[in-house]
Length: 254
Image 1 (cartoon, rainbow, N blue to C red):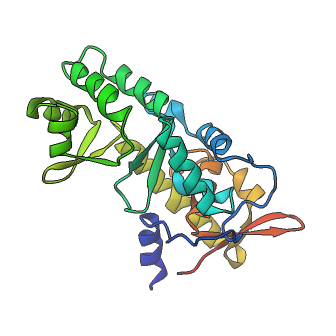
Image 2: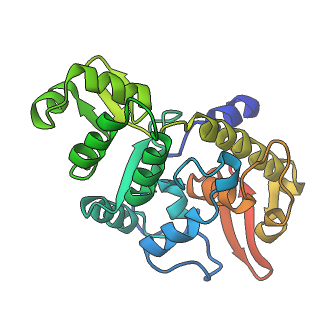
């Protein structure tokens, strides 16, 4: 594939997961968190809250966890457990079918309710958070389920879409969504392309992770550099290679 086209394509594509405990794409510095929940807590600290005036919950991409934990099957199992316990919510982010956002439920509810202050949609949103979000691990909701199980009216569903907690999936179903997250998606994709470009343009298309982490953000990279590095390593867009001098990031040619 033409590399220019591939770079654009990769921006929207998380490479298919390998199962097992191989170290490809893993952070081998040995200084990362040892359990998945602690890793989520760490990764969310890299989320640029001020960039969005603290109106968005702190979003972690599921594949970013793979940049620290080698065993992807274990990560998936632990994420599922946290979701089943009601601690964690997962979202289909829209720019790629394999890209999932993770947000702590308490953070999501707090930010959603803060954004609903004084709005006519607040009552419907509060009902949705209590009835649907607190008891459901689904990524999407069918009209039948919304009407019969959660007892929403058509008018309330319209209000939920207007508020941004639901987005249309197809006729008669909706994705659970993060209100006002369009700017996050825009900046995330823009930053991913820029950071991948930095690695590709380096000599031999490889760079020391410590060196790129220290680079200042630019107009194209608005997030913490580490946020993007965990993204491109976890998505296997670069290979993470331990060396005596530290971790080396090598561009993966498609």
